[in-house]
Amino acid sequence: MAYKLLALDMDGTMLNSAKKISPKTAAAIAELSKSGVHVVVSTGRALAELSDYKAEFKFMHYGIAISGGLVYDFFNAKPIAVHPVPENLMLKIIDAGTAERAMIHLMGVRESLMREDDIRNCADFHMSDYQEMYERISTRCDDFAAYIHANPREIVKVNLYHRSPESRARNFDRLKNLPLTLALAETTALESSPQNVTKASGLRELCNFLGIDLSETVAVGDAPNDIEILKTAGIAAVMGNASAEIKALADFVTEDNDHDGIVRVIQKFF
Image (cartoon, rainbow, N blue to C red; front, side):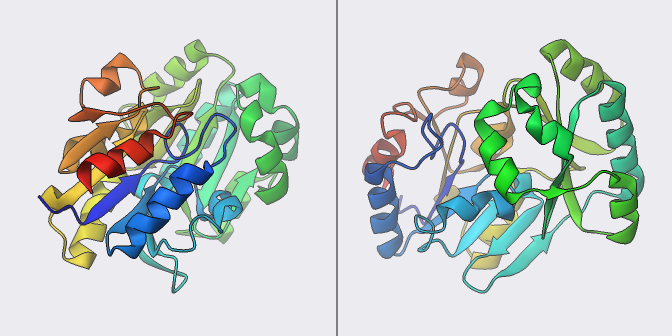
């Protein structure tokens, strides 16, 4: 099989423990892109949170961002597909976050919004690794409801970062019967996207746009929010740092994210 597209998760996959792309991995994905293979990011991050990696991504034409809520053309700086969260559901998610004193994060096409006080206290929500980035790229917002009313169809995903796994579990129960796609991430994060919107739906949309069959794709991931895309792609490659649950989905288990696991995937399938 001549695979035509490689979809790469970011955190725990393309990024090492220091949240960097190693020179070896960057060189491998750049060289693969030059060969004509579509190398695309497949991430829960919004565009604002990809800005630190512009140099490494300069060859990357397309991306699946915000957990499939945004399929984006980087070269032309325009969306291919956008799937906003309905306003009434966003307000319910925010209410759930407030009930658990969680850190609320609105991820939009143009902006990534958080409260200043939450950013200062990222450690309380097990998100210390991201604090410096949030301080630089996030738009501060104290009234989420007002922003939502003023910017309809802008917010594509709402993340709730909790103080404990037990708090996250309570909010999962609060929200599980709503028409949303819920995914677990990080230590205590709960991601809420529109119903049926996942990294897998983003892969389908991008493949339709490019005229590529899903069987001609390889997806690489490590976390629960990668499950659907791993099940959908032609080849599911899983990082060595993934849990046993995620590794059980794999056609191939590679090295961990601190030992250039993506390079081994490229060597095997491309």
